[in-house]
Length: 108
Image (tube, rainbow, N blue to C red; front, side):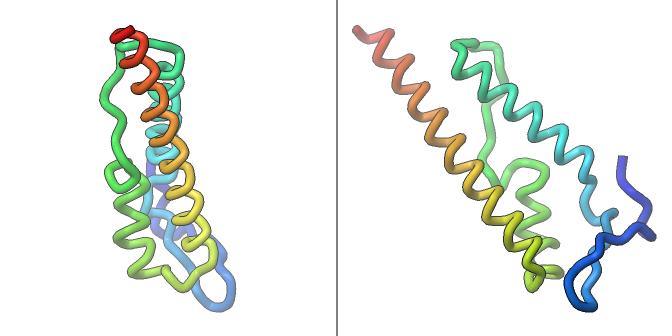
């Protein structure tokens, strides 16, 4: 559920960002589902959808599109981009390590 366009996030200086530009709840829930998929992979479950990269999740397109083009001067948006990139990098490393572990176990 998106917030009404009249709802604003306070930003430093005179800049404001309309919350309705991003469905925060949907993005948060998508990340929780994604984290559950990663946890299932680590725990050895094969029943999962393929995990997507950072630009493919619900939040990534907003960050790399509207977020940076309209609000790229805001520290909060730049910090969100950095945190999102770091999270996905660590998740990619975790997935790679787990896939390597499973492959090694099957081959030996």
